[in-house]
Image (cartoon, rainbow, N blue to C red; front, side, top):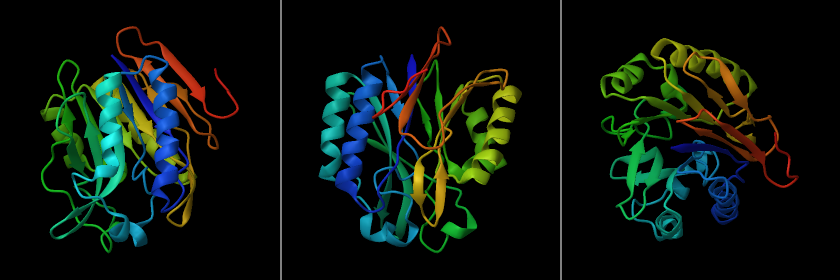
Amino acid sequence: MRICIAQTGPVKGDIQQNIGKHYALIELSASNGADVIIFPELSLTGYAPRMAKKLAFNRNDKRLDTFQKIADHRKLTLGIGIPTREKSGTCISMVIMQPYKARSIYAKKYLHPDEEEYFIPGEGLNGIMGSNPAIAFAICYEISVPAHLSHVIQSGGSIYIASVAKSESGVKDAVERLSHIASQYSMPVLMSNCIGPSGGFLAAGSSSIWNRAGILAAQLNERDEGILLIDTETDEIIEKYLGNNLQR
């Protein structure tokens, strides 16, 4: 399986422009053989808590239909960050689209205290996809919550993907934490972060992949949109950027 994390610079509140950015990164990922593509936290709206209620998606929002068509046609699994509208409030969610399957939602259960004014916790812990390998999802603050990690391990998660929106200092903490998770549980760990202005801070990119020993295998820079892709069978890694055709 080829799993890809995308690093995008969302324009706060501009969903249509962000959809275009997603298309470009999906095309770049698919052209390099990706099977799964995961985007940062709230990637379609930008991390904008004060605007989240207004920007929230319904679960069957037609604006997501084109992504489902891409998933079907290209045989891709997509994980895209959106706020979702629930009966009692707004959730920070990842919509997961698989080829010819009904879309599913993983809603962030563990919120940072700063988020509680604007969001409600997701119900349940259902962020496990597939088997052999089983991919486990975490959304930002959840990587620091022991109960979330316990659920991942007890549910048989064998690849851990964190979808985040983090500043430079937040990235430093996340790198330490995710490296520890990778080495302690001997599983590949990936982190998809955004770049640019985000919710009152500057998102610092540095989307990363750690191997089963907890060693940093690859990391994007802090300023450009791009992708990191790992082949879970061969451990081959592909690193590419949009726009200026940077690649390593």
